[in-house]
Length: 335
Image 1: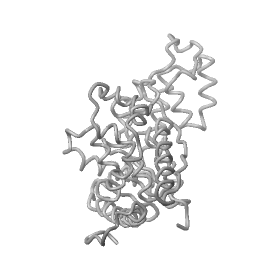
Image 2 (image 1 turned 90 degrees about the vertical axis):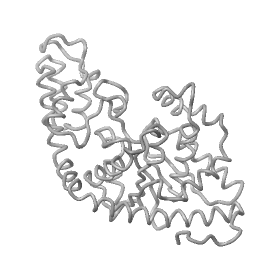
Image 3 (image 1 turned 180 degrees about the vertical axis):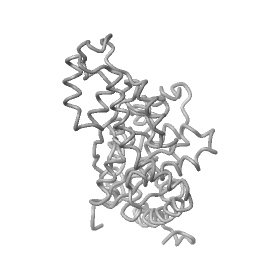
């Protein structure tokens, strides 16, 4: 590889929101010029929590692809692909499963947190418990060196490093031990630590101006402020946190006026609404163009997936040789 390789991506469980943009998409747009970038649309992982709604997957895959491209991901620079269409990932998942204990998975803090969120504590599907192993295969099938993640995903990257290290020690030095790039996080409109579709506290990249206005109106502000002239505490205000991210030119002035009781929550939300509508407008316009031409998006996904399949087969040739399961040539494999 001439350049280091990055693996990043999204679970297709609906359209992307501002939390995705701040936490991953903006970063991958910047990094695509510096690294060989693979962007996975992890549809198999989406089934770990939505296995009973497979009819949603096709549109959700399309939504995630459109949102990425609308935000500036360039298919000429980055490889966007669909997880389920790359056989090497499934094959690697099976091999990696032998290198991980059930205890390691059960003690994974992200698994614990999400199990509570999806009410899986008493009856956990095997696919959900094992998805960190699948995620390791997502990362290592293309022998990625770097993985941009949020803080909550850091345990998965550490497990991936352990799997790579153990495989290399037992069999042969096939895999790099990928390093994480820690992405920032945008809190939810309700003050929750994370903006999330499942928590209903998100502003989507495809939201209309009216939807943005309505959602900003629900954002949690300083609970101690009763009157607009009361001195505010912007450090506890969701609206101020969004100004810090999307309105940096005015945020210092807004903070000073808030603390002095010279701007109320309603006009502060109004200004944030204007800023977000202006920020989302070009993304929404590009997305609308893609919605009118879905065949173009599917063509991008097909080409990206073909490249991912070929890269996966190169990796699996090394893995089969290392594990000594290359008994004879396998017809029909990608070359």
